[in-house]
Image (tube, rainbow, N blue to C red; front, side):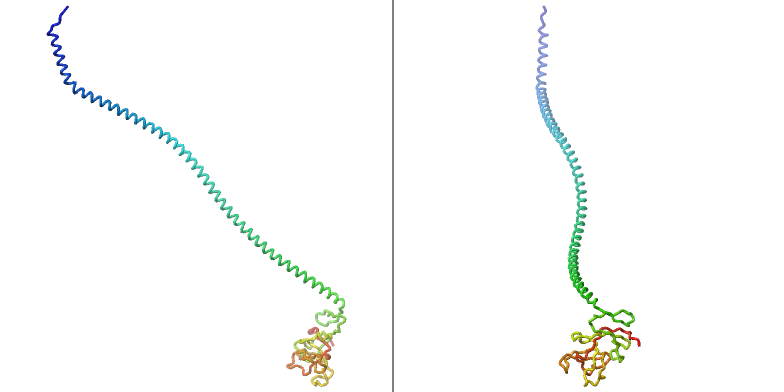
Length: 288
């Protein structure tokens, strides 16, 4: 067996001590460095973990936002589709509104036409009422005329004819009971221009009620005291005034020729009147 040399073992111990001393000198700053580095590492790890947590939180928020955005996109798409539908509905409503306006205008025109028709109907009803009233009056008048016609027809059956020498040649009709005749005036010119020398007179015997102012009468010489008339002669003059007769208290007539300036000097009593001129046939003097 071999025994170590003490000197040799001392040397390593010294070296170890030297190393230890060196290590001790170096260990203090290194420890601090390592401690600091550890702290840095721990801080870094904490920051990393904190950043990781923040990143995770942000990722979660991003995911939530993405989900919301997705939902929002769906809402946007839905809203867009609804907007398109509403736009289409609005267009249809606008078209319907235009159609309603056209319909309203058409209805207004028709209403005006109906009102005009109603007014026309009212006017027609008023006219119809007036026409009905006029018809009733005409029927009443026709009834009266029919009665008058029947009366005249009855009288016509009793008429007889006398000859007319006028240029037309139509017969004159008289009641058979009436004393009427055709005569021609004496051509003195006192009744011109109403009666000329070539005219023909239709005369009848009047009653008192047939005589009035304006009638042309034939009368005899009023009385013997009237010197202006030829005794027994007949005069053809117009009545200008109806007065009382001085002889018998009855009626008398002031007379005058149409061509004369003054009235006749003697009045003609009713008893002297022998005829009243009914008609004057001009230019129809009897031949011979």
